[in-house]
Each structure stands twice: as C-alpha cells, then as structure tokens.
Length: 133
Image (cartoon, rainbow, N blue to C red; front, side):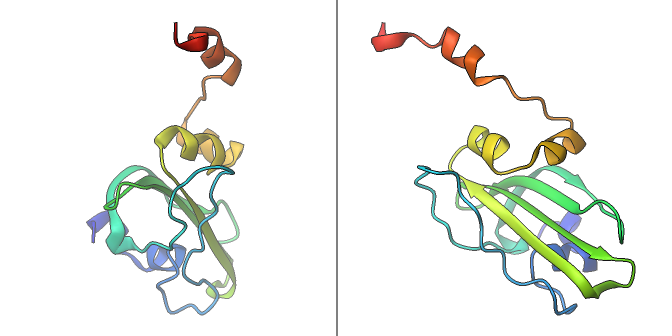
C-alpha cells in the first residue's frame, strides 16, 4: 500500500476501516465505458495524481489516480463532527481513460478542489478531423 493511503481516514474512504458506515466502493462508471466495474482497495492503487484531506463536518476526503490493473479511479468519503462511526459515507468511480474519469467520474467541485480545468468538448470536436482525413 502506498504510504499516502496508510491512514485511518483513508481506510474509511476506501471502505476498509472500522467506523461501520463506509463499505467497499461500488464504483460508478460513465455510460458506454467498457471498464470493469469491480471494487478497488488501497492495495490496488498504483499511482496517486491528486489527494486532499477532508474535515469532519466539512469537505470530503478525495483522491484520484490509477490502479494497478490500469483503470483510473476516484474515491471520496466524509463524516460528521463525531467521526466515521456516526454519520459517514463513501463512494467512487472508475474509468478506462484519464479523460473519462476527469469528465464523468468527479463532480465540478471535486475538479475545482484539485485545480483541474477541462477542455470543453466543442473545442476537442473542432480540432478532431472528421471522416479520418
């Protein structure tokens, strides 16, 4: 396990802690993405691209990167002021590509916290040749 994830709070985010309210992540996938929807754990993480600690009763703990099997992941979790054993929750997403994860696997506020700005799809379409020319 990466040392950055070897922590009580990150165990809860990934549904591996003892708080009792967070469970194994059942990842959300973008429509049409052929990625495998299997859950993932901290042990499956190969690389972290962004990681931000949260606060009780405040912003969630969020992390994203790539798994050892090549999928891209996003995981998040949060709790109330009493901690992970009262009111808490977690979730996540996986994608076959980094772009799909950034576009469809995170919320606007998650991307904002990470400082990620997306290229609008209309700009991508304008520079993509049509008909393979």
